[in-house]
Image (cartoon, rainbow, N blue to C red):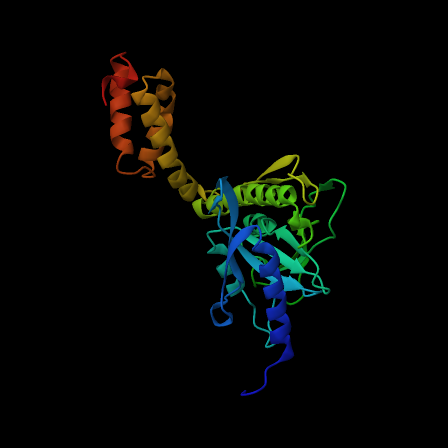
Length: 311
């Protein structure tokens, strides 16, 4: 309406502007206009010093900005009682890790949280009915990761997995203020911590798209410090054939590259890969090049010559 607008729009805008003012001191940010915002407020790339008066950008991530006590929920039902499953479709199609940036009501600080547990939940249940996310204050002692919990949702039978999942994100990986970023050493350390989390989390996203239900993540951490102990999480599916084709097709290029390297280097350990290559080919999981590698290795093994004999 001309001359008027809901005050909530201005409040949300002010939170995003403040977040940008703080985070732009350690990263290059590209804000997404309101009309183009489908769930992400900002594209973010940490900036690193590469020489005298030179810097570059590194790993890409996505930011969702929340201010005050605003909650973060995915799925559930809207005001008309319709399930918002499209929010999970959106999450599953992301190709960069997603982070929550919270702004306090006094506009004094930014807290950053990794949303990697969302993908861990999706691996466990397929598509949740709803995910509720909560978080904690910055910590000065070591925090240990808390596994998501679920409970049946009333009236949600047949909608997603029918459960509400609660994710405790723990304390922020970074708490940033204009004051602490005036210290060069703190600013540089913040960049390295952020980059570390992004590097780990983007593997989770990449493996999700490859169909590999394996997650690496921080198990313990302290705000504004490099994470300590890491953890590895794996999901197994009991239904015969479930996820096998995706895993096999993700494995085939890796086995091909490993086998070709060992073959060209004359390493006889490559012969150990023959049964795997045979299994891939017999199930039509290989690619255009795996048959040739299998043929050359099998011939070299039969003739008792080195693996590099037939390249």
